[in-house]
Length: 249
Image (cartoon, rainbow, N blue to C red):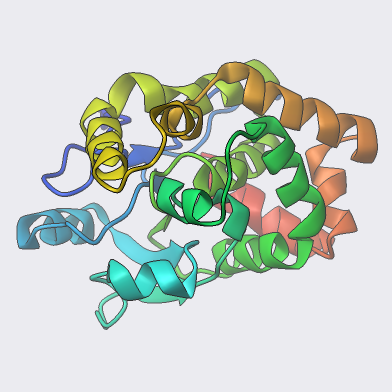
């Protein structure tokens, strides 16, 4: 009997840990279960959570947060010799709400932030993709703070390289708003206690489908396709093929 998998991994200390497996591709295949996980911050994981992830086959953790974030909320896998750990900061402008509020942000366009990341963070995005391509066998988990923005950009690129269509990529992005309620509420309460403007909080916490759609349209318009974007930022054909091998069943 074939294995059955749930997309959301239920853990005590993280509430947006999701499998990228099971999505159909335009070629008629499906993405592979228990190969890639996208996640929110891991600093509150319990010992049971860590054991659960290791039993699932976790082999590599890629932390997309800035040094300031990792110092405050320590990744439990950073010093765990059972997995490979990489800290590859992706885009400071997509850092947590408090950081933006401290910088004086009043309002912003999240879709514009995503486009900025695509254009201004190409070396960092390439480093993340290479780390995933070259990771040893087992599950690769990549994450930021909420598992929505920085993580969402990388997830979208990976799914597109696998041949998943835009609508499915957008649906995967929007899942944060429907399945990560406990995480969103915790981040909301934390930001309110810090005195952040409630309107700014809601803008940061949203996972509007149109935000991801605008990003995908931008990449198609400027680069032709996301695989072409991967080539433009320096990945070789062999590295892109390694990514496909990891993603596809």
